[in-house]
Amino acid sequence: MDPTPASPSPSRSPGLSRAIAITALITGTFYGLAAVVSYMADGGTAPIRIFWSIASALIGVEAAFRGGFLTAELGVVLHYLVATIWTWLFFALYPRLRILGKYPFSAGVGYGFVVWVVMNLVVVPLSKAPKISFNPANAGIAVAMLMVCFGLPLSLFARRHFAKA
Image 1 (cartoon, rainbow, N blue to C red):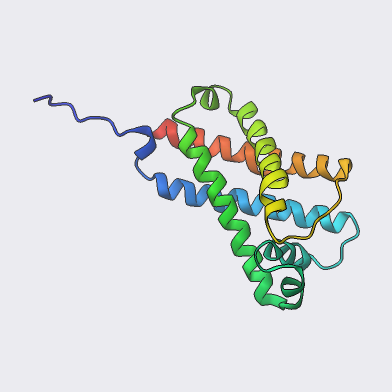
Image 2 (spheres, rainbow, N blue to C red):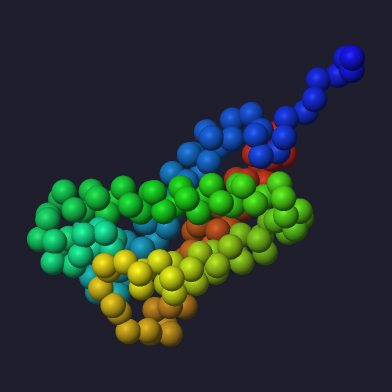
């Protein structure tokens, strides 16, 4: 028998679920706050509309915007659910793709871009969310926010987690 204990698999490292949950909470909050700030800077007056829009992906526009705080809460839950799914995927890929750990800044920025592409070209069009015409300036801002407020911190948190594992 080998007296040295086997090191844990990176995908089953100690505290992985906790690291994913905390990272999703933090990055989801960063991105949510960035969305609110961007909306307000663009002349928006009711940030609750952001979360109604998110809820509309599931229940439709009319129901979401008539639902008041309840549908806004649904939007917040969906926002964090999506953040958690993307965070889980990055953490699942991290030990398998060495490039993610080798270039964490590029990985985070690239992942933010991938998230934007998949969400805007696949997920949102398949949902009940309102169809919005493409605006290059708004898309650029949204991509930049996902890169800086979601992808980059996600990559750095994953790097920190797996360095401890």
